[in-house]
Length: 262
Length: 167
Image 1 (cartoon, rainbow over the protein chains, first blue to last red):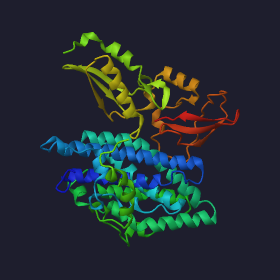
Image 2: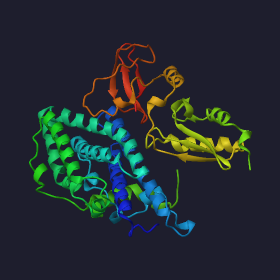
Image 3: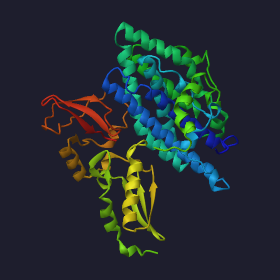
């Protein structure tokens, strides 16, 4: 396993992007075979696949960068090792991505909050000076656009639906709110990269989210603006208790049968 | 050292038409526009492939198929995957669209810039049923059996069908 402790801000940030996608992908794929109707089951697993594909693009780039510095061939790493052989403290994903799926509304809300964030961030990264990051951003943005539309339409459908669906959508949003401040609470590697302006990102994000909540006739939470409650740590590798269970399931095969392949 | 003249670039391009997308076997990688570049570099052919979607599971199979084919013909080669420029359905040939329809998958009807719009509840595009050609169809889901497809229903012949969505 490559030493990933003393890595550059760029590599730490790439892990942040890769891990957030991978962990939410793993969560969304838990719905496979359990969706409320077949079409939506397929929709969610398609999005899980997109997120996995995006995670792979970042891991491949990390492996490429790490391999430039290795002294002997046996130290070469690859995307599979990075996904399946790191422990929870090495994962930099947003806490939002590792939270349990809960009911349909909570699953929707997680994807809604994450995909809007990705959309705004990737839009900024399409101008990035690094060719690989720019290529991944342009490619991913097309896929994320579908995720934004799908999740936003569901927020509106449930918010503007029955009493029951409105209550559940509202509960889901309030359950996840404390985890949103982490999106805009920059990690040291984000600050030193100076790849995007977090304040402007936050402004665009809140405007987009509020627009959908308004259409959904859902109350716009005040704490959106003042960040009363903050849950943070994911970006630095400090997680909720959920991450261990996710990794145990996701990494089991590779750790039990090292170097196995499909 | 193999002389590049043993196979020309055009011949190699024709050879690559033997490689099909394992998920939509009626289409070749050339039909889909996945082959981005073929060039002779020093002592081998460099072939650049781009995936349709980031997670397209067919890419690994396609790379393996190309490797096997070129090895059989003793053609020295190196395969490269690039994400840029990002693949779009605009690159699909007219021939590919006709083959898709005959196969039972409705081909993309719009330009790809449509997908980049973030407007919610967009008006559905009119997609003709590949079975009965009716335009009385409706979208069931923007996501289908593979990443590149959406699911439609024909209100005339009542069949459901795949639509190769714009990307």
